[in-house]
Length: 461
Image: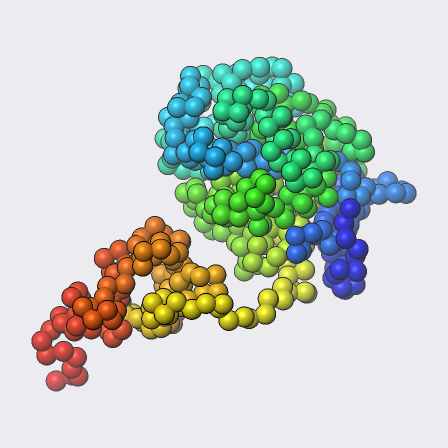
């Protein structure tokens, strides 16, 4: 059950209700349900329906389409974290004979494996999965359309392969693994392969008339890991909370953060839209904030899950129509409404419990050539390096326990930051992947790039 609506201000609740009411009316959806998550729990639920009487609530199932892919990606990341595979492994190593084995597991997760977007005809979303009983039926005679790893090309068959990989490594069906490793630990008891009452019916709405047609509910068979699941706003709210902070029973915070990190080369149009893809998660910059999550659609249903991690707000939106409301825009708007009306209140500042003098000695102003940088010791024990003015290369660094630090992001990701000391123990300079940072610009006492001219600094002559 969701928490009381009083967790949000009345004006915020009304703005949220107004947004989904407009989406349902203008999108002509038989019903539309939504939830907002803050602080790791659902704080608002709303619904609009064309049926008089009791509307759908957070326990009514809708089909969620490709949000299923994120569940599959979590299962693969679990295999990686257990040491059963590496994301750089070729698929052939674990699942031989597919015809797509030269793609890596990371390629499949990020849709960069070069695979076709869809399985061969007939259209898999509107026909029984029994027509495609084997992986060869899903992939067709020419699985690869593009060179492996060169471009992001969304692929439903790619996630069918990942589901088969999970089955091969675990020795159990994808559904069994999903239930035991994600659904049960997270308490997602209303998420299932097949619809379980109460659930919405899927409808197609005529584009030029207010008339409807029921959509068939096909079992996707082999394609299930790409889009089979049914769920509720209540369950997806809990799943969104997990994707924001992790849960050691399922996947660590570090691993879900890795899923949220861009992993695919963006097309030109994607760059203009501010969109890319991580490992089983879509990533987009919108309204000045970074959003992660996934959309989903199958005949009769639309779904969207949107998370703004920095704002600590997430939204889930589900509708039972083939097309109509733009749920990605609705989800982003629900997040924006809460983030702007009730911005996240930061935790109180607290001093460090312990201060290592050797680390504190590194803090302060440094120069790379004539570029001024600041190095700060953060509350979580990391070092944060960034330019003092304007934009430039920024990164956080994690201690290696031997006096050196490893970059966690950006240009310096994986690079080694090493304080170089003089014979008396004082810090001479910082060596960051061969870049020398000194306390003064072009410090003459540093080996490189110090002492570049014997006359030193000068004015115009």
